[in-house]
Length: 242
Image (cartoon, rainbow, N blue to C red):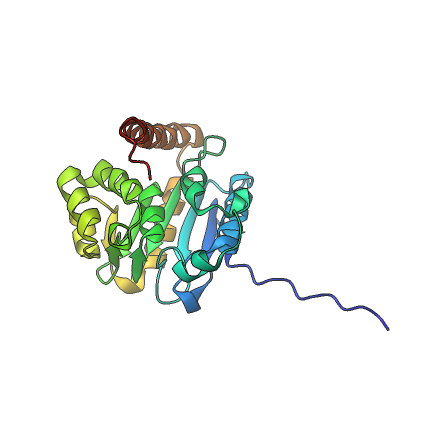
């Protein structure tokens, strides 16, 4: 009797290269609104590594399958998790993927539907982001008894302290139109044009001189890393990191 091979696990994040120097990072857990759990984070880490290592891709479009871009971290899966996560599955390492020092290539987020918690972080960490009028953003962490600091520093870097503090402290929702008005996204576009617009923007970036584009992206990312480091140092001095 011959042995059988277990079917390969469905990849919940994939990477593939398209045309014109554009790669595609796709969140593929639509039945859970692309909420992220450990194994999905592992897939995201591997997908980013594939993009980072693909010299033919200068820019990536990040999007979500189904009705939402990303509804945040999967709270139920997190509660059921047993033991510490593997390094690639640690959800707290998300900025390491987007602000990578060794692969400075821009990410364009195409955000639709719900963009909540960890999904909001992805959009804010991305170098450019598009959304639609029906996109809904929210950072609910404080109301769940979780640390809202990482959301505050990203929001205030784009929209200022007053909006960031109110949005994170209350967990209130805002629309794609407001996101554009406050400078949280690059542009709010028609719902049926989101993918096309994101691909067009990515292709335009990929056509720029690579060295100059890299320098610009690296400057932005270093500024974000500096803001984050300053915030964490202040919290360590006051003992409020937990």
